[in-house]
Image (cartoon, rainbow, N blue to C red):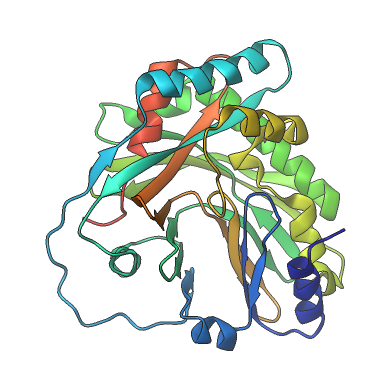
Amino acid sequence: MIPAGFRRMNELGSRSQPFLFIIDFDLKKPLVYTPEEAVTSGILYQIHNKRNYAFPASPEVPFTFQKTPISPLVYKKSFDQVMGHLLAGNSYLVNLTCATMVETELSLREIFFRSHALYKLLMPNEFVVFSPETFIRITEGVISSYPMKGTIDAHIPNAESILLGNPKELAEHHTIVDLIRNDLNIVAKKVHVEKFRYIEEINTNFKKLLQVSSRITGVLAPDYASHIGDILFRMLPAGSVTGAPKKRTVEIIREAEIYNRGYYSGVLGYFDGSALDSGVMIRFIEENDDGKVFKSGGGITFRSVVDEEYQEMIDKVYVPFT
């Protein structure tokens, strides 16, 4: 049975009532708030140009940001489990993620306000999100998705050519585009790839990164607003943070990963009464009893090299400000 949060999205959508939604990776604890409820709960968000806060007038003081990733040997154990499934033909692409402890003087709230990202969310005393990746947008009945796969240090000579010409990255991107196209076909018609593999730049506190995205679109039924919850539930978890085929790959992820994703790699978004915009929560810091935990990862294919994937996981542990 579809969880209550998704049913509430259908109800609010049918009334053209704006709402914020925050969906966990396992689809078990979806959170839905009207704008007023979000304010009362102390939740801050920015979905592109929609936000419910003003920037505080406070100085941006210097800070440190120290990463303590899991050891290469621990990572290799999970990587080898995934590779075994890939070589056995149980999956074509697996998004393997890990938890990295980080030490910084910055609070989650300070990280939220200083971050530059398309999608930002602050759940007070729980976690902060600053994601560059769109999940889906819906405008005038057209649904669009923007899977993001492939990352490289922008300062490497010929970085863009290396990234676009890498056979492993190309295969990974093809797989994820096919998966997202199939997901859109579940809920929409006239699905097609509008733009394949374009480069975006991301500035971080360590280095500039290049990432590769594509754009896929389709057409929804005229009454889609009454079924927003159903649309999201049928498309999740997001293909870019799972792999293909999705159902079997999610089982592999649960076997290989040594921690609980929780809301990391879930989806946040906002419905304004007619249009919807949402992002995948792929840049994510959680606060627990042990301190701050940054969750990150990347796609593994049979072409993957363990040392390169381990480094990519570490490179994605950053805050998007200088």
